[in-house]
Image (cartoon, rainbow, N blue to C red; front, side, top):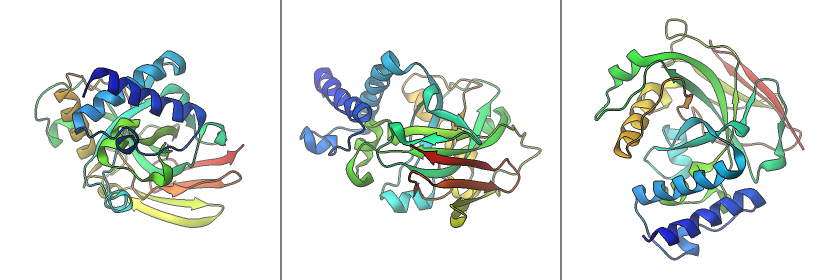
Length: 262
């Protein structure tokens, strides 16, 4: 695909986010087809546009790593994207709906590495050896597309629906928490909505990091130490609205609570 067409698509996606307007899929609007790597090229252009107005990126997110999300979106391949600093809030802080279109939440294990990774064919064991600490988190996804309906290429181009993250304040070593069997239960307004465990995420959250490291290597990018990596939803994504009180209870890691406000 020509660079000018990619830039046009990126601008379309950027404008939709800024205007908080749901849009039709880019593959349909522009009557184009493109492969996964071209979708990441468009994502990079979207990220570049956002850096001009929204500051710097602060974390990675990985999506479509659990059976619940694969079933929900009918896409069976993991994806990654960039979380910006302005998207991040912390346990107990109110979450404003001001920048969202139709947000949904999913509990996640966030992993931070102590060493950079830039090599071909990264293994699970290599990732496990490089984990510094982990903590509980909640991602707020907010697809720019109507009804969260999209193809793999559409969602990758759209920075995989990134729009928010809520982090806990306590870090845990792998000696302190078994992330494979860590359970998360989602409550909204006191009602149990969903639950999942760590092994629902790519059979182990560290496998999501393996995917990310290998995907970045193919694009000539180092997975840097110290950068949070959200490993993917332990449950399906659940809708939130103004006035909702959200509580996500984890077995060992910190619980996360917040209220959705205007």
